[in-house]
Image (tube, rainbow, N blue to C red; front, top):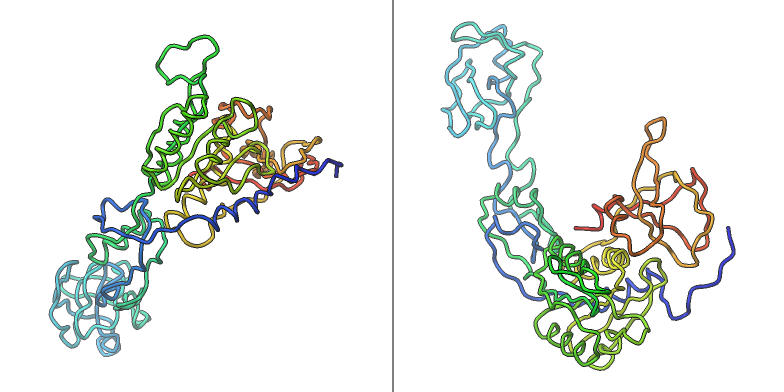
Length: 412
């Protein structure tokens, strides 16, 4: 353990900052119907209850033969084949002392209580020998075995994935009631920013933040409203943020939230709204801001691209999910794995460094980190496949356990 100075008293811990964001996040109160094919990624507004039992009727789980198990003893296992039942057809009641050729998914005929798979049977023309040791009641999926009519099958607040849409389709539903898409207005502060594709002038850089931020929000199912570049001017910043607040459910700006003379986003929010949070004790990403412009929540991220990515993954993602009506625990799942690196000089703040998984000589996963701690290196995000959560003031030696958060847990 190395000694370190405490973080600034103005900076909230990540957990405290996230709790404050979620406490103040407005949750949706309206809903709208959408066609099932258009519901991917949307948030279910009310619990989905099944209108029918699943399975709807007893059906065969195998290709084989349906029979009365009691008939086997008297026939020494040999039974005449009285009918053939395919999926999508309904057979006649099973004649006593007979078997029915049946296929997977086909309704079990009235009177049958067992299905024996075809590989266990011996067929001779229009009769079949069923092994006498066949289990009574086998290979039949009973009506209501999965759930009965009225059962809640998808909880309200669920972000709908392909599996949810498949389940809804299996119940015959053509549309679902979901929350409206969250509208998020985004802008990037800085006179030095130039749109990709345009020529660079002296001292200018390409604006990557709006593209990164917009893509992260789109992946979360948001409708993105692009406010463009926000000039380094207080009046222009106030006007741009106010325009975003009028058009959207949430406003996010990158850059301009620190304390420099040309950082105008924070004073703009304080002039036209209220600021509830400024500075979080993490690296990268300490200078963040959260507040309101009128009734519209506002989030400000640092301008360095890695800081933007990290603060959006850790703070904006759960804020957006809560505002969309997603319920339950919003924390990303982690993996506790041994470090493949040394960390002799820990920061006084909790650090989220770019990391990826590698295999050691025995094929076990370990966590390695990017060589540079620079928050300007977008290449590090492409190199990485997650973040490692490093506690403040704690040195790490190779082999020590660390907490790894995959990007797959932070970007959806």
